[in-house]
Image 1 (tube, helix red, strand yellow):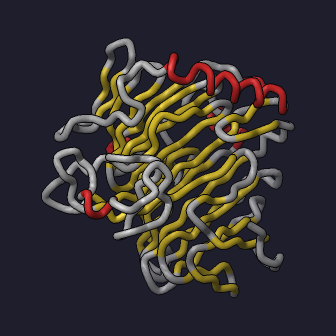
Image 2: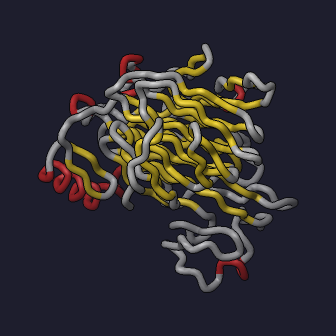
Length: 346
């Protein structure tokens, strides 16, 4: 997709949003899934009459308000590979069941964040169980991919879950007394620091200026993004609301804004509640090659990795199903292959 024309002021360029979002280095891409799933049946799946006739296994067309993606019973993404980058998954609504090639498993959602650093071959499934049979199961899931520098390609995979109860949220009022909130996934805002990322992460070094913020604004409210570095990339994704203004320029919803990073930028929300994602950071700036789920140093490395995935993925998968999910009634948790288990605070 092409950017719109260049403008004056803090907005460098604009771009209309679709399911998958374009990004700038150090980010690879992002996606935003919203689906109005119905009440779940005994298998935590949609009613048969609502999934019949779909192209199950690759269903990206919303019918009855939801998609099955690659799932055939429970919606979601059965076993697939990641190699050479990080994946930050934020489930604002709904639940995600997770199993991986390391022997880890878990269920997270309703504001939790999963951070996966896959420097080397890593396989997992991500299924969206319809866990409630007495009410609908809507989801709102944002997934953000961050590249890894060449020195970290080949590092062992690392997985962690950040529970919603522990993630810092700055709630404030602007000069006019209008409210806003900023959920800090990476970096800092308003004097608050995010939870530490994985140890192998471009976001682990503060001078990389990586920030991932979820900004929610009341009608008419203002939030200022402080200047960082002139070499940083700053992108704002306007996903909910009606309009937003930067100075005298007003824009409608469903836009990506490439913003100047070396000056303060004030966001003025329109006349309805607004939702924004900020992705910001210093570029890695290294030449790399990519195809499918692999980002490595050269075309040959990527081809070799793809061959290895095709030959070995089932040998590395320790579970009985490639679309495995947890039993009905399972709470939020992460269990590691060494037997350690973590749950959200009481």
